[in-house]
Image 1: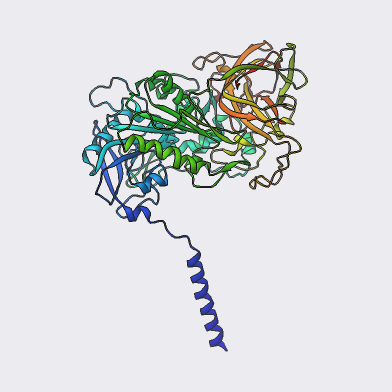
Image 2: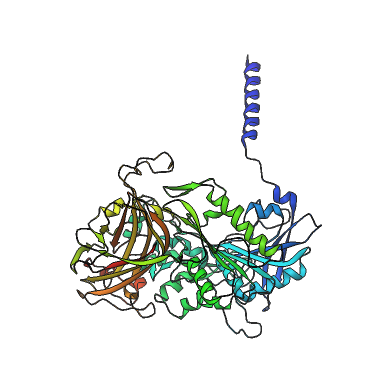
Length: 638
């Protein structure tokens, strides 16, 4: 009997093991089967070596373009025989055959040097002076001279930080660089990622150490660690922490000798220190900006700027990058692609396209990869290219109609400016009817949350399409909306909020949100299978665009100034571009508030020279006023 039981048990375990093996996903070996990998250290003009990984097609019967990504996020896996399972911008470009190169930028991972976040560009460099522009130039120069079977044409691409380095590659570009696609590219740190119009994105605080932990020796292992919040309620965590200076403890660490892990001394995270010591748009931040240098992009480099309408991290960057090249390079081939994506989602292979709760359609990212991105790089890298690529100047997704449109310019030529006033009785109207003030109390102990979700996130993303009903029902959020629309109403271009405000204090933040209020009778929740359980599409308040301005910067980002208590004051807030149709039967709503926590840090509402050094006593509840001659300036498609 025991033998029978034992035999049965062994058989069951064997069967289970086989089933588990069958159910395991097969490892993707396409890259290993079709490419060889080589790791080299390329010497820059100042002697620093940058670690570079080169994937070359095994088929050596023809020549290939080089596609390069420079990244602070590691070109791993390192070591002989260890290979990525996916290379290049997308699967099509991988399978067609291209030489694909990844490089650790200066001071990151296996590259020598010391990293500088958004390292400043140096015009008119002296001999042996270097910056990211020269590092890119020197790398391309080495690649075209030393990598076998390359056709002499180079393309660059990247998303987020790698997108920034793709932008950098276009400045004073190497002659071999023919095409660049900066995607979700950082353009200026005072308006992208960690700041929005001077307000600090507190919700990104755990990412600080990723970029500011000191390292001066190559390593294939992470040398940084992330702060542990020990809470699943980030709203309460940051509220309890109080002033920003109380977060300093998370950004001090023991400096290590990377080679032998010997503690040397206690130092500050250099990125955090930079943020704290430079609260205004001074020469430090200005020098790191790249937008102002895009007049140096030669017409020999074709650019395709890619972004997501719902990218919480980098929306300013790609929009301003496209506009700057367009304005300053009249003869440049320069196009833009903006879809219904959050940060980098266009590179995913998923069929259903969601941002947070909201569903935009199927195969949107897949179509971009196969019909736009692949066509762009092939046209400029694989043939004798001209500017007749067959691609539109602006390929943009209408996030209201849920459809792609092509235009010869962006914004489209057939737009007009319309002013919509924040009128009494929560009305949004085209006629100014009064100049009365509407008051609300901004309580520093009960700031308006940016999300109703109770959780902690590393970098928040889904809030960009979150249902805003929870905010509309708070007394410290002013709501203005149209009646039910009798015809479609399309916004195409940027938005400018021209507020007339006052405060009993001397400092305040101002947040404006543009909302698409869906019909109450809308009940099609089935297509939105990611809709959170507590929500319905009925009366869904879709956030289309939102932005903050730290009020001290209302006249100058370089020279902040306090408010004069109770004095009516102009505050103009530029919101980034949208392309959205408010459909017949919907309503257009504007929300105005003064806190957005903890997406941005809490303003003391008492003017201090440096908010990062404010004391608890500086934080005071104030009464704010928005006057009804305030208006929103829309670019409306005729």
